[in-house]
Length: 177
View 1 (spheres, rainbow, N blue to C red):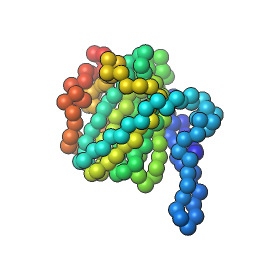
View 2: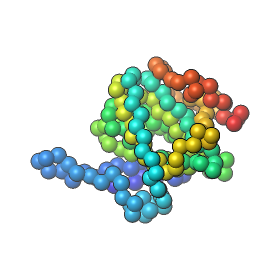
View 3: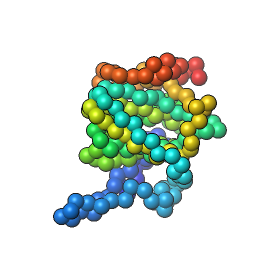
């Protein structure tokens, strides 16, 4: 696996290294030693799948509050997404910044998201599936988020929003959290 740290501290894009032959390819998508060698201690406790019918569907921006803050490894296994991560760590040098990445079934790219970052995505194709490995259990009392169109972050989404949950529309503006 090839790890590239992004401009947000602790956020990594991870590319697989396929070994190809006439059958196709084989590649490693998880190796604790590789993660540890990049300073990432990740205990996978839960896996989730998000299926999205329509292009333009938006999910986010989600996070869990302490003490249940979560790490995630996100991969798009079918279709394509515009994946966004915003730094909401008050002590971070990149506090208030966001980054976006294209994850799709063709590039097989993964995104490692550390604790303290808000995460969301917009589908850029119909019938999109996203696979999450979680480093902490979901706790409804700790679940939170910021509004997808929060003026503090001013995230540039690639498409008009075709579908979004009421909950995601009603998250507070970042300064109100």
